Image (tube, rainbow, N blue to C red; front, side, top):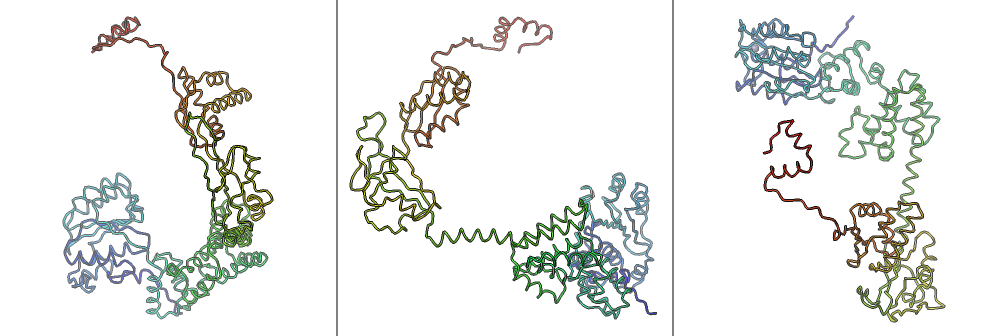
Length: 616
Ligand SMILES: [Zn+2]
Protein backbone atom coordinates (compact mmCIF):
# COMPACT_ATOMS: atom_id res chain seq x y z
CA UNK A 1 0.00 0.00 0.00
CA UNK A 2 1.36 3.30 -1.04
CA UNK A 3 0.32 5.34 1.91
CA UNK A 4 1.53 8.84 1.78
CA UNK A 5 1.82 11.40 4.52
CA UNK A 6 2.66 14.99 3.95
CA UNK A 7 4.07 16.35 7.12
CA UNK A 8 4.68 19.80 8.43
CA UNK A 9 8.08 18.52 9.40
CA UNK A 10 9.03 17.30 5.96
CA UNK A 11 8.18 20.63 4.45
CA UNK A 12 9.58 22.82 7.15
CA UNK A 13 11.42 25.58 5.28
CA UNK A 14 15.20 25.23 5.30
CA UNK A 15 16.10 28.66 3.92
CA UNK A 16 14.75 32.16 4.44
CA UNK A 17 13.40 32.23 0.92
CA UNK A 18 11.10 29.30 1.49
CA UNK A 19 9.44 30.78 4.55
CA UNK A 20 5.87 31.58 3.55
CA UNK A 21 4.36 34.99 4.02
CA UNK A 22 7.05 36.57 6.22
CA UNK A 23 9.25 38.25 3.65
CA UNK A 24 9.38 41.45 5.73
CA UNK A 25 11.23 39.52 8.42
CA UNK A 26 13.38 37.22 6.33
CA UNK A 27 14.67 40.10 4.22
CA UNK A 28 15.63 42.07 7.31
CA UNK A 29 17.41 39.09 8.82
CA UNK A 30 19.28 38.31 5.62
CA UNK A 31 20.45 41.90 5.37
CA UNK A 32 21.55 41.91 9.00
CA UNK A 33 23.58 38.74 8.39
CA UNK A 34 25.15 40.12 5.21
CA UNK A 35 26.10 43.38 6.90
CA UNK A 36 27.20 41.66 10.08
CA UNK A 37 24.84 43.73 12.18
CA UNK A 38 23.21 41.00 14.16
CA UNK A 39 21.60 41.86 17.46
CA UNK A 40 22.25 39.61 20.44
CA UNK A 41 18.67 39.13 21.38
CA UNK A 42 15.60 38.79 19.19
CA UNK A 43 11.98 38.60 20.08
CA UNK A 44 9.78 36.86 17.54
CA UNK A 45 6.10 37.59 18.14
CA UNK A 46 3.08 36.44 16.24
CA UNK A 47 0.26 33.92 16.09
CA UNK A 48 1.04 30.23 16.32
CA UNK A 49 2.17 28.30 13.31
CA UNK A 50 3.40 31.22 11.22
CA UNK A 51 7.09 30.31 11.22
CA UNK A 52 8.65 31.83 14.34
CA UNK A 53 10.58 28.74 15.40
CA UNK A 54 11.36 27.93 11.80
CA UNK A 55 12.88 31.36 11.25
CA UNK A 56 14.85 31.03 14.48
CA UNK A 57 16.33 27.72 13.29
CA UNK A 58 17.13 29.07 9.86
CA UNK A 59 18.82 32.06 11.45
CA UNK A 60 20.87 29.72 13.67
CA UNK A 61 21.93 27.64 10.71
CA UNK A 62 22.71 30.61 8.49
CA UNK A 63 24.96 32.48 10.89
CA UNK A 64 26.95 29.32 11.55
CA UNK A 65 27.27 28.41 7.88
CA UNK A 66 30.87 28.06 6.81
CA UNK A 67 30.10 29.07 3.28
CA UNK A 68 27.58 31.85 3.44
CA UNK A 69 25.94 32.64 0.12
CA UNK A 70 26.12 36.19 -1.22
CA UNK A 71 22.34 36.59 -0.86
CA UNK A 72 22.58 35.93 2.86
CA UNK A 73 21.31 32.34 2.75
CA UNK A 74 23.00 29.25 4.17
CA UNK A 75 24.77 26.96 1.72
CA UNK A 76 23.01 23.85 3.04
CA UNK A 77 26.01 21.71 2.06
CA UNK A 78 28.78 22.52 4.54
CA UNK A 79 29.34 20.40 7.63
CA UNK A 80 27.72 22.94 9.92
CA UNK A 81 24.60 23.22 7.75
CA UNK A 82 24.38 19.45 7.52
CA UNK A 83 24.58 19.00 11.26
CA UNK A 84 21.87 21.62 11.66
CA UNK A 85 19.69 19.91 9.08
CA UNK A 86 20.16 16.59 10.85
CA UNK A 87 19.37 18.16 14.18
CA UNK A 88 22.79 17.17 15.46
CA UNK A 89 24.35 20.58 15.93
CA UNK A 90 25.59 21.46 19.39
CA UNK A 91 25.30 25.15 18.72
CA UNK A 92 21.55 25.32 19.02
CA UNK A 93 19.67 25.03 22.29
CA UNK A 94 15.93 25.08 22.45
CA UNK A 95 14.06 25.63 25.65
CA UNK A 96 10.33 25.32 25.84
CA UNK A 97 9.42 27.84 28.47
CA UNK A 98 5.88 26.51 28.65
CA UNK A 99 7.11 23.41 30.47
CA UNK A 100 10.47 24.68 31.80
CA UNK A 101 9.57 27.95 33.36
CA UNK A 102 11.28 27.80 36.74
CA UNK A 103 14.33 29.73 37.89
CA UNK A 104 16.38 26.53 37.87
CA UNK A 105 15.67 25.93 34.20
CA UNK A 106 16.86 29.41 33.37
CA UNK A 107 19.92 29.07 35.60
CA UNK A 108 20.84 25.93 33.75
CA UNK A 109 20.56 27.78 30.48
CA UNK A 110 22.61 30.70 31.77
CA UNK A 111 25.25 28.21 32.94
CA UNK A 112 25.51 26.80 29.43
CA UNK A 113 25.91 30.25 27.93
CA UNK A 114 29.27 30.60 29.66
CA UNK A 115 30.89 27.99 27.42
CA UNK A 116 32.04 29.09 24.02
CA UNK A 117 31.05 26.92 21.05
CA UNK A 118 33.39 24.05 20.18
CA UNK A 119 32.79 24.46 16.51
CA UNK A 120 31.18 27.25 14.57
CA UNK A 121 30.86 30.90 15.43
CA UNK A 122 27.64 31.25 17.37
CA UNK A 123 25.63 29.45 19.96
CA UNK A 124 21.93 30.09 19.57
CA UNK A 125 19.44 29.81 22.40
CA UNK A 126 15.81 29.60 21.38
CA UNK A 127 13.33 30.13 24.18
CA UNK A 128 9.87 29.24 22.96
CA UNK A 129 6.71 30.56 24.62
CA UNK A 130 8.87 32.93 26.61
CA UNK A 131 5.82 34.65 28.13
CA UNK A 132 5.32 31.54 30.27
CA UNK A 133 8.49 32.12 32.29
CA UNK A 134 7.90 32.91 35.93
CA UNK A 135 8.74 36.38 37.19
CA UNK A 136 11.83 35.13 39.06
CA UNK A 137 12.96 33.21 35.99
CA UNK A 138 12.65 36.39 33.97
CA UNK A 139 14.77 38.20 36.51
CA UNK A 140 17.40 35.48 36.51
CA UNK A 141 17.53 35.83 32.74
CA UNK A 142 17.79 39.62 32.56
CA UNK A 143 21.49 40.00 33.28
CA UNK A 144 22.57 37.45 30.69
CA UNK A 145 20.18 38.89 28.16
CA UNK A 146 21.66 42.33 28.65
CA UNK A 147 25.32 41.40 28.40
CA UNK A 148 25.64 38.09 26.62
CA UNK A 149 29.02 36.78 25.48
CA UNK A 150 29.82 37.73 21.90
CA UNK A 151 29.15 34.21 20.65
CA UNK A 152 25.68 33.89 22.20
CA UNK A 153 22.48 34.85 20.46
CA UNK A 154 19.08 34.60 22.11
CA UNK A 155 15.90 34.18 20.15
CA UNK A 156 12.80 34.48 22.25
CA UNK A 157 9.51 33.47 20.67
CA UNK A 158 6.05 34.23 21.93
CA UNK A 159 2.45 34.32 20.84
CA UNK A 160 1.64 36.86 23.52
CA UNK A 161 3.86 39.88 23.28
CA UNK A 162 1.81 41.90 25.76
CA UNK A 163 2.77 39.50 28.53
CA UNK A 164 6.47 40.17 28.12
CA UNK A 165 8.03 42.47 30.70
CA UNK A 166 9.17 45.84 29.37
CA UNK A 167 12.67 45.14 30.71
CA UNK A 168 12.89 42.17 28.33
CA UNK A 169 11.29 44.01 25.43
CA UNK A 170 13.82 46.82 25.67
CA UNK A 171 16.71 44.39 25.40
CA UNK A 172 15.49 42.62 22.27
CA UNK A 173 15.14 43.39 18.61
CA UNK A 174 11.47 42.74 18.00
CA UNK A 175 10.04 41.07 14.91
CA UNK A 176 6.29 40.82 14.44
CA UNK A 177 5.23 37.85 12.36
CA UNK A 178 2.14 38.21 10.23
CA UNK A 179 -0.73 35.81 9.93
CA UNK A 180 -0.23 33.95 6.66
CA UNK A 181 -2.84 34.92 4.08
CA UNK A 182 -5.14 32.28 2.68
CA UNK A 183 -3.71 32.79 -0.77
CA UNK A 184 -0.17 32.22 0.45
CA UNK A 185 -1.22 29.11 2.32
CA UNK A 186 -3.14 27.74 -0.65
CA UNK A 187 -0.19 28.40 -2.92
CA UNK A 188 2.20 26.65 -0.56
CA UNK A 189 -0.14 23.67 -0.31
CA UNK A 190 -0.32 23.60 -4.09
CA UNK A 191 3.48 23.38 -4.30
CA UNK A 192 3.50 20.49 -1.86
CA UNK A 193 0.76 18.51 -3.58
CA UNK A 194 2.54 19.05 -6.88
CA UNK A 195 5.78 17.69 -5.46
CA UNK A 196 4.02 14.73 -3.92
CA UNK A 197 1.93 14.01 -6.99
CA UNK A 198 -1.32 14.26 -5.11
CA UNK A 199 -4.47 15.10 -6.99
CA UNK A 200 -6.05 18.07 -5.30
CA UNK A 201 -8.30 20.71 -6.77
CA UNK A 202 -7.81 24.38 -6.06
CA UNK A 203 -11.10 24.75 -4.20
CA UNK A 204 -10.18 22.11 -1.64
CA UNK A 205 -6.81 23.74 -0.96
CA UNK A 206 -8.54 27.08 -0.49
CA UNK A 207 -10.96 25.51 1.95
CA UNK A 208 -8.03 24.09 3.91
CA UNK A 209 -6.31 27.47 3.89
CA UNK A 210 -9.46 29.15 5.21
CA UNK A 211 -9.92 26.55 7.89
CA UNK A 212 -6.32 26.88 9.10
CA UNK A 213 -6.79 30.63 9.70
CA UNK A 214 -3.25 31.66 8.84
CA UNK A 215 -1.50 28.82 10.62
CA UNK A 216 0.67 26.88 8.21
CA UNK A 217 1.24 24.01 10.62
CA UNK A 218 -2.52 23.46 10.88
CA UNK A 219 -2.92 23.69 7.13
CA UNK A 220 -0.32 21.01 6.57
CA UNK A 221 -1.75 18.66 9.15
CA UNK A 222 -5.25 19.12 7.71
CA UNK A 223 -3.86 18.29 4.29
CA UNK A 224 -2.18 15.21 5.80
CA UNK A 225 -5.43 14.09 7.29
CA UNK A 226 -7.49 14.54 4.15
CA UNK A 227 -4.89 12.93 1.93
CA UNK A 228 -4.80 9.85 4.12
CA UNK A 229 -8.61 9.68 4.27
CA UNK A 230 -9.11 10.04 0.58
CA UNK A 231 -6.17 8.02 -0.71
CA UNK A 232 -4.64 11.02 -2.37
CA UNK A 233 -7.73 12.26 -4.20
CA UNK A 234 -8.53 15.56 -2.62
CA UNK A 235 -11.55 17.41 -3.91
CA UNK A 236 -14.01 20.03 -2.71
CA UNK A 237 -16.65 17.57 -1.56
CA UNK A 238 -14.48 15.24 0.51
CA UNK A 239 -12.63 18.22 1.96
CA UNK A 240 -15.76 19.87 3.31
CA UNK A 241 -17.01 16.50 4.54
CA UNK A 242 -13.79 15.95 6.41
CA UNK A 243 -13.62 19.41 7.84
CA UNK A 244 -17.25 19.46 8.81
CA UNK A 245 -17.82 22.56 6.73
CA UNK A 246 -21.29 23.26 5.48
CA UNK A 247 -21.48 23.62 1.74
CA UNK A 248 -22.11 27.19 0.67
CA UNK A 249 -24.99 26.01 -1.46
CA UNK A 250 -26.99 25.55 1.71
CA UNK A 251 -26.43 29.16 2.64
CA UNK A 252 -27.48 30.34 -0.78
CA UNK A 253 -30.64 28.28 -0.47
CA UNK A 254 -31.29 29.50 3.04
CA UNK A 255 -30.89 33.13 2.04
CA UNK A 256 -33.20 32.79 -0.90
CA UNK A 257 -35.96 31.16 1.19
CA UNK A 258 -35.61 33.82 3.85
CA UNK A 259 -35.81 36.58 1.29
CA UNK A 260 -38.93 35.08 -0.22
CA UNK A 261 -40.32 34.90 3.30
CA UNK A 262 -40.77 31.18 2.86
CA UNK A 263 -40.40 30.25 6.50
CA UNK A 264 -41.37 26.62 5.99
CA UNK A 265 -38.53 25.89 3.58
CA UNK A 266 -36.05 27.78 5.73
CA UNK A 267 -36.94 25.74 8.79
CA UNK A 268 -36.92 22.50 6.83
CA UNK A 269 -33.55 23.37 5.40
CA UNK A 270 -32.19 24.05 8.85
CA UNK A 271 -33.59 20.74 9.99
CA UNK A 272 -31.79 19.01 7.15
CA UNK A 273 -28.53 20.76 7.99
CA UNK A 274 -28.98 19.88 11.64
CA UNK A 275 -29.58 16.23 10.88
CA UNK A 276 -26.30 16.16 8.95
CA UNK A 277 -24.57 16.80 12.24
CA UNK A 278 -23.99 20.53 12.02
CA UNK A 279 -24.57 22.25 15.33
CA UNK A 280 -26.65 25.40 15.56
CA UNK A 281 -23.73 27.70 16.37
CA UNK A 282 -21.80 26.43 13.34
CA UNK A 283 -24.78 27.29 11.18
CA UNK A 284 -25.24 30.72 12.75
CA UNK A 285 -21.58 31.51 12.41
CA UNK A 286 -21.33 30.11 8.91
CA UNK A 287 -24.40 32.01 7.77
CA UNK A 288 -23.06 35.22 9.27
CA UNK A 289 -19.77 34.73 7.41
CA UNK A 290 -21.71 34.05 4.26
CA UNK A 291 -23.75 37.25 4.62
CA UNK A 292 -20.57 39.16 5.34
CA UNK A 293 -19.15 37.89 2.07
CA UNK A 294 -22.27 38.98 0.21
CA UNK A 295 -22.10 42.39 1.84
CA UNK A 296 -18.47 42.74 0.85
CA UNK A 297 -19.41 42.02 -2.78
CA UNK A 298 -21.77 44.99 -2.85
CA UNK A 299 -18.86 47.37 -3.21
CA UNK A 300 -16.27 46.68 -5.90
CA UNK A 301 -13.61 48.27 -3.70
CA UNK A 302 -14.33 45.95 -0.80
CA UNK A 303 -14.75 42.91 -3.02
CA UNK A 304 -11.11 41.96 -2.62
CA UNK A 305 -12.02 40.98 0.92
CA UNK A 306 -14.24 38.28 -0.47
CA UNK A 307 -12.80 35.13 1.00
CA UNK A 308 -14.33 32.27 -0.92
CA UNK A 309 -13.29 29.36 -3.03
CA UNK A 310 -12.39 30.15 -6.60
CA UNK A 311 -15.22 29.68 -9.04
CA UNK A 312 -17.77 30.66 -6.41
CA UNK A 313 -17.18 34.38 -6.69
CA UNK A 314 -19.65 34.93 -9.54
CA UNK A 315 -22.43 33.40 -7.52
CA UNK A 316 -21.65 35.72 -4.63
CA UNK A 317 -21.60 38.77 -6.85
CA UNK A 318 -24.89 37.77 -8.45
CA UNK A 319 -26.54 37.35 -5.06
CA UNK A 320 -25.13 40.65 -3.89
CA UNK A 321 -26.93 42.51 -6.65
CA UNK A 322 -30.29 41.09 -5.62
CA UNK A 323 -29.86 41.62 -1.91
CA UNK A 324 -30.02 45.02 -0.33
CA UNK A 325 -27.41 46.16 2.12
CA UNK A 326 -29.85 47.15 4.84
CA UNK A 327 -31.19 43.61 4.91
CA UNK A 328 -27.68 42.20 5.22
CA UNK A 329 -26.67 44.53 8.01
CA UNK A 330 -29.84 43.89 9.97
CA UNK A 331 -29.50 40.16 9.41
CA UNK A 332 -25.90 40.19 10.62
CA UNK A 333 -27.08 41.93 13.73
CA UNK A 334 -29.69 39.30 14.41
CA UNK A 335 -27.21 36.50 13.79
CA UNK A 336 -24.67 38.09 16.08
CA UNK A 337 -27.20 38.35 18.88
CA UNK A 338 -28.28 34.78 18.30
CA UNK A 339 -24.68 33.57 18.42
CA UNK A 340 -24.03 35.36 21.66
CA UNK A 341 -27.14 33.94 23.26
CA UNK A 342 -26.55 30.43 21.91
CA UNK A 343 -24.56 29.19 24.87
CA UNK A 344 -27.21 30.30 27.31
CA UNK A 345 -30.11 28.91 25.34
CA UNK A 346 -31.69 25.83 26.82
CA UNK A 347 -33.24 24.62 23.62
CA UNK A 348 -30.51 25.19 21.07
CA UNK A 349 -32.54 24.18 18.06
CA UNK A 350 -35.41 26.46 18.99
CA UNK A 351 -32.93 29.26 19.56
CA UNK A 352 -31.59 28.98 16.01
CA UNK A 353 -35.10 28.60 14.61
CA UNK A 354 -36.12 31.73 16.41
CA UNK A 355 -33.30 33.61 14.72
CA UNK A 356 -34.43 32.23 11.37
CA UNK A 357 -37.99 33.37 12.03
CA UNK A 358 -36.70 36.86 12.73
CA UNK A 359 -34.64 36.81 9.56
CA UNK A 360 -37.65 35.60 7.64
CA UNK A 361 -39.76 38.61 8.52
CA UNK A 362 -36.88 41.02 8.47
CA UNK A 363 -37.40 41.97 4.83
CA UNK A 364 -40.98 42.93 5.61
CA UNK A 365 -39.90 45.16 8.45
CA UNK A 366 -37.30 46.84 6.29
CA UNK A 367 -39.78 47.34 3.44
CA UNK A 368 -42.14 49.00 5.83
CA UNK A 369 -39.65 51.52 7.10
CA UNK A 370 -38.31 52.17 3.63
CA UNK A 371 -41.81 52.75 2.31
CA UNK A 372 -42.56 55.18 5.05
CA UNK A 373 -39.47 57.10 4.16
CA UNK A 374 -40.50 57.23 0.54
CA UNK A 375 -43.98 58.49 1.32
CA UNK A 376 -42.56 61.34 3.29
CA UNK A 377 -40.19 62.18 0.47
CA UNK A 378 -42.91 62.03 -2.15
CA UNK A 379 -45.09 64.44 -0.29
CA UNK A 380 -42.40 67.02 -0.09
CA UNK A 381 -41.45 66.81 -3.72
CA UNK A 382 -44.92 66.52 -5.27
CA UNK A 383 -46.64 69.31 -3.47
CA UNK A 384 -43.76 71.78 -3.59
CA UNK A 385 -44.49 72.38 0.02
CA UNK A 386 -40.96 72.76 1.17
CA UNK A 387 -40.84 74.20 4.63
CA UNK A 388 -41.44 77.88 4.43
CA UNK A 389 -42.35 80.65 6.73
CA UNK A 390 -44.15 83.55 5.23
CA UNK A 391 -44.87 86.56 7.33
CA UNK A 392 -47.25 89.13 5.96
CA UNK A 393 -45.44 92.39 5.83
CA UNK A 394 -46.23 94.81 8.52
CA UNK A 395 -46.44 98.52 8.01
CA UNK A 396 -47.39 99.13 11.58
CA UNK A 397 -45.57 101.52 13.85
CA UNK A 398 -42.49 100.30 15.60
CA UNK A 399 -42.81 99.40 19.22
CA UNK A 400 -43.50 102.34 21.42
CA UNK A 401 -40.50 103.10 23.59
CA UNK A 402 -40.97 102.39 27.23
CA UNK A 403 -42.44 105.10 29.34
CA UNK A 404 -43.92 107.02 26.45
CA UNK A 405 -47.60 107.55 26.16
CA UNK A 406 -49.03 105.13 23.69
CA UNK A 407 -51.34 106.61 21.14
CA UNK A 408 -51.89 103.63 18.96
CA UNK A 409 -52.06 100.26 20.62
CA UNK A 410 -48.98 98.29 20.05
CA UNK A 411 -49.11 96.67 16.68
CA UNK A 412 -48.81 92.98 16.59
CA UNK A 413 -48.00 91.44 13.34
CA UNK A 414 -49.64 88.33 12.20
CA UNK A 415 -47.52 85.58 10.87
CA UNK A 416 -48.54 82.40 9.29
CA UNK A 417 -46.23 79.60 10.09
CA UNK A 418 -46.73 76.38 8.28
CA UNK A 419 -45.20 73.87 5.97
CA UNK A 420 -47.12 75.43 3.15
CA UNK A 421 -45.53 77.90 0.84
CA UNK A 422 -48.17 80.54 0.56
CA UNK A 423 -47.10 81.59 -2.90
CA UNK A 424 -47.40 78.08 -4.24
CA UNK A 425 -51.09 78.11 -3.53
CA UNK A 426 -53.21 79.27 -6.38
CA UNK A 427 -55.52 81.83 -5.02
CA UNK A 428 -58.34 83.14 -7.16
CA UNK A 429 -58.77 86.56 -5.68
CA UNK A 430 -55.75 88.78 -6.18
CA UNK A 431 -56.76 90.94 -3.24
CA UNK A 432 -56.29 87.99 -1.00
CA UNK A 433 -52.92 89.03 0.25
CA UNK A 434 -54.50 92.01 1.87
CA UNK A 435 -57.09 90.09 3.68
CA UNK A 436 -56.86 89.96 7.39
CA UNK A 437 -58.16 87.03 9.21
CA UNK A 438 -60.86 88.19 11.45
CA UNK A 439 -60.99 84.93 13.21
CA UNK A 440 -57.45 85.50 14.33
CA UNK A 441 -58.79 88.38 16.30
CA UNK A 442 -61.23 86.03 17.90
CA UNK A 443 -58.58 83.57 18.97
CA UNK A 444 -55.88 86.03 19.91
CA UNK A 445 -57.34 89.33 20.82
CA UNK A 446 -54.01 91.17 20.78
CA UNK A 447 -53.14 90.12 17.29
CA UNK A 448 -54.05 92.52 14.62
CA UNK A 449 -53.17 92.46 11.02
CA UNK A 450 -52.36 95.48 9.08
CA UNK A 451 -52.58 95.78 5.37
CA UNK A 452 -50.23 97.64 3.16
CA UNK A 453 -52.76 100.16 1.97
CA UNK A 454 -54.68 100.71 5.12
CA UNK A 455 -52.74 101.05 8.33
CA UNK A 456 -54.68 99.56 11.15
CA UNK A 457 -56.28 101.69 13.73
CA UNK A 458 -57.51 100.54 17.04
CA UNK A 459 -61.00 99.48 16.24
CA UNK A 460 -60.74 98.70 12.64
CA UNK A 461 -61.32 95.20 11.63
CA UNK A 462 -59.86 94.57 8.24
CA UNK A 463 -61.74 91.63 6.98
CA UNK A 464 -62.88 91.94 3.45
CA UNK A 465 -66.23 90.44 3.67
CA UNK A 466 -67.48 88.15 0.99
CA UNK A 467 -64.04 86.85 0.17
CA UNK A 468 -62.49 83.69 1.43
CA UNK A 469 -60.03 84.43 4.13
CA UNK A 470 -56.50 83.18 3.87
CA UNK A 471 -56.65 80.77 6.75
CA UNK A 472 -59.64 78.90 5.44
CA UNK A 473 -58.03 78.66 2.02
CA UNK A 474 -54.89 77.35 3.59
CA UNK A 475 -56.84 74.84 5.58
CA UNK A 476 -58.77 73.76 2.56
CA UNK A 477 -55.65 73.41 0.47
CA UNK A 478 -53.50 71.65 2.97
CA UNK A 479 -56.18 69.68 4.74
CA UNK A 480 -55.38 68.99 8.33
CA UNK A 481 -51.91 67.72 7.55
CA UNK A 482 -50.36 70.98 8.46
CA UNK A 483 -50.66 72.98 11.55
CA UNK A 484 -51.45 76.55 10.75
CA UNK A 485 -50.82 78.60 13.80
CA UNK A 486 -50.77 82.21 14.57
CA UNK A 487 -47.75 83.80 16.11
CA UNK A 488 -47.87 86.95 18.10
CA UNK A 489 -44.99 89.31 18.14
CA UNK A 490 -42.98 89.63 21.29
CA UNK A 491 -43.93 92.40 23.64
CA UNK A 492 -41.56 94.42 25.80
CA UNK A 493 -41.90 94.12 29.54
CA UNK A 494 -44.35 96.50 31.07
CA UNK A 495 -44.57 97.03 34.79
CA UNK A 496 -48.31 96.79 35.31
CA UNK A 497 -48.60 93.61 33.36
CA UNK A 498 -45.53 92.21 35.07
CA UNK A 499 -46.98 92.87 38.48
CA UNK A 500 -50.25 91.23 37.59
CA UNK A 501 -48.17 88.36 36.31
CA UNK A 502 -46.39 88.09 39.64
CA UNK A 503 -49.72 88.24 41.42
CA UNK A 504 -50.94 85.46 39.21
CA UNK A 505 -47.88 83.40 40.07
CA UNK A 506 -48.40 84.02 43.77
CA UNK A 507 -52.00 82.93 43.46
CA UNK A 508 -50.83 79.83 41.63
CA UNK A 509 -48.32 79.09 44.38
CA UNK A 510 -50.95 79.46 47.06
CA UNK A 511 -53.34 77.29 45.18
CA UNK A 512 -50.84 74.50 44.70
CA UNK A 513 -49.68 74.62 48.28
CA UNK A 514 -46.34 76.37 47.83
CA UNK A 515 -44.30 77.38 50.85
CA UNK A 516 -45.60 80.39 52.67
CA UNK A 517 -42.10 81.88 52.84
CA UNK A 518 -41.79 81.68 49.07
CA UNK A 519 -45.11 83.39 48.65
CA UNK A 520 -44.08 86.12 51.10
CA UNK A 521 -40.76 86.61 49.41
CA UNK A 522 -42.49 87.11 46.09
CA UNK A 523 -44.80 89.61 47.76
CA UNK A 524 -41.93 91.49 49.36
CA UNK A 525 -39.86 91.71 46.23
CA UNK A 526 -39.51 95.18 44.74
CA UNK A 527 -39.73 94.93 40.97
CA UNK A 528 -37.96 97.36 38.67
CA UNK A 529 -37.77 97.16 34.93
CA UNK A 530 -34.29 97.39 33.45
CA UNK A 531 -35.06 97.32 29.75
CA UNK A 532 -37.45 95.73 27.24
CA UNK A 533 -36.43 92.23 28.09
CA UNK A 534 -35.11 92.24 31.62
CA UNK A 535 -36.22 93.21 35.05
CA UNK A 536 -34.87 93.06 38.57
CA UNK A 537 -36.36 91.81 41.81
CA UNK A 538 -34.97 93.30 45.02
CA UNK A 539 -35.35 91.26 48.16
CA UNK A 540 -34.13 92.04 51.68
CA UNK A 541 -32.24 88.83 52.42
CA UNK A 542 -30.06 86.25 50.73
CA UNK A 543 -32.46 83.49 51.76
CA UNK A 544 -35.29 85.29 50.08
CA UNK A 545 -33.30 85.62 46.88
CA UNK A 546 -32.61 81.90 46.99
CA UNK A 547 -36.25 80.95 47.38
CA UNK A 548 -37.14 83.07 44.39
CA UNK A 549 -34.31 81.56 42.42
CA UNK A 550 -35.70 78.12 43.13
CA UNK A 551 -38.89 79.11 41.38
CA UNK A 552 -37.02 80.72 38.50
CA UNK A 553 -37.90 78.27 35.76
CA UNK A 554 -41.64 78.14 36.36
CA UNK A 555 -41.91 81.81 37.09
CA UNK A 556 -39.96 82.91 34.05
CA UNK A 557 -42.01 80.54 31.94
CA UNK A 558 -45.18 82.34 32.90
CA UNK A 559 -43.64 85.73 32.19
CA UNK A 560 -42.30 84.66 28.82
CA UNK A 561 -45.71 83.34 27.91
CA UNK A 562 -47.49 86.45 29.06
CA UNK A 563 -45.27 88.74 27.02
CA UNK A 564 -44.75 86.15 24.35
CA UNK A 565 -41.08 86.91 24.60
CA UNK A 566 -38.60 84.11 25.16
CA UNK A 567 -35.76 86.59 25.56
CA UNK A 568 -37.00 87.88 28.90
CA UNK A 569 -34.73 87.38 31.88
CA UNK A 570 -34.56 88.66 35.38
CA UNK A 571 -32.12 89.04 38.23
CA UNK A 572 -32.71 88.70 41.93
CA UNK A 573 -30.71 91.05 44.10
CA UNK A 574 -30.35 91.45 47.81
CA UNK A 575 -31.06 94.94 48.96
CA UNK A 576 -28.11 95.65 51.23
CA UNK A 577 -29.06 99.20 52.09
CA UNK A 578 -30.40 98.20 55.48
CA UNK A 579 -28.22 95.20 56.18
CA UNK A 580 -26.47 95.30 59.56
CA UNK A 581 -22.77 95.64 59.29
CA UNK A 582 -20.57 94.00 61.90
CA UNK A 583 -17.53 96.03 62.70
CA UNK A 584 -14.43 93.91 62.48
CA UNK A 585 -11.27 95.70 63.55
CA UNK A 586 -8.30 95.62 61.26
CA UNK A 587 -5.21 93.80 62.47
CA UNK A 588 -1.65 94.58 61.59
CA UNK A 589 -0.36 91.12 62.52
CA UNK A 590 -1.57 87.68 63.53
CA UNK A 591 -0.80 88.23 67.20
CA UNK A 592 -3.28 91.11 67.30
CA UNK A 593 -5.79 88.94 65.57
CA UNK A 594 -5.18 86.18 68.07
CA UNK A 595 -5.63 88.54 71.00
CA UNK A 596 -8.87 89.79 69.55
CA UNK A 597 -10.23 86.26 69.00
CA UNK A 598 -9.03 85.18 72.43
CA UNK A 599 -10.80 88.09 74.05
CA UNK A 600 -14.03 86.97 72.38
CA UNK A 601 -13.47 83.25 72.99
CA UNK A 602 -11.35 82.50 76.06
CA UNK A 603 -11.31 78.82 75.15
CA UNK A 604 -8.92 79.66 72.34
CA UNK A 605 -6.32 80.89 74.81
CA UNK A 606 -6.75 77.76 76.85
CA UNK A 607 -6.33 75.62 73.79
CA UNK A 608 -3.16 77.46 72.81
CA UNK A 609 -1.67 77.00 76.26
CA UNK A 610 -2.59 73.33 76.54
CA UNK A 611 -1.19 72.45 73.16
CA UNK A 612 1.73 74.83 73.57
CA UNK A 613 1.00 76.46 70.28
CA UNK A 614 2.80 79.49 69.00
CA UNK A 615 1.36 82.43 67.20
CA UNK A 616 3.64 83.44 64.44
ZN1 LIG B 1 26.54 26.01 5.07
